[in-house]
Image 1 (cartoon, rainbow, N blue to C red):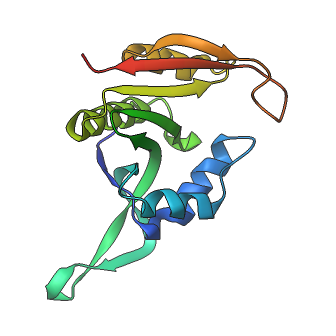
Image 2: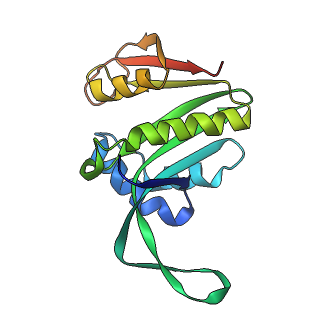
Length: 168
């Protein structure tokens, strides 16, 4: 597994999240959708997986010292929307250059941990039947198939499989 850190996204991350989204999905969320999710700390959480690699030329002010520090590269993200004790994984994506390194697994586990700590006991998600890698990941993390939405995806009419996870 790649050395990564999972931290909440900030507004300044919206461009990179949108870049990963466009590289991962045929119908991507807008940059504005990420800003809305990141800004809603009452009913949403967007987690990022940051690698030890830094983005060339990207620096931030490191607190009161005024020193600049490099910003670790965001390799992936996941979003969770929740109300009371129930939530939904809105999306989870890893940049194609970083797939197969355990980042998706780490993100999904971090989302489950966040939910446990926030009193969210049930998570739902939708996935294309053709996305066998994602389905394997969800099963590995304890999600079970709970239904199907026929013709859900607008780009090709593919069904969506519904998966759910319950914190026991």
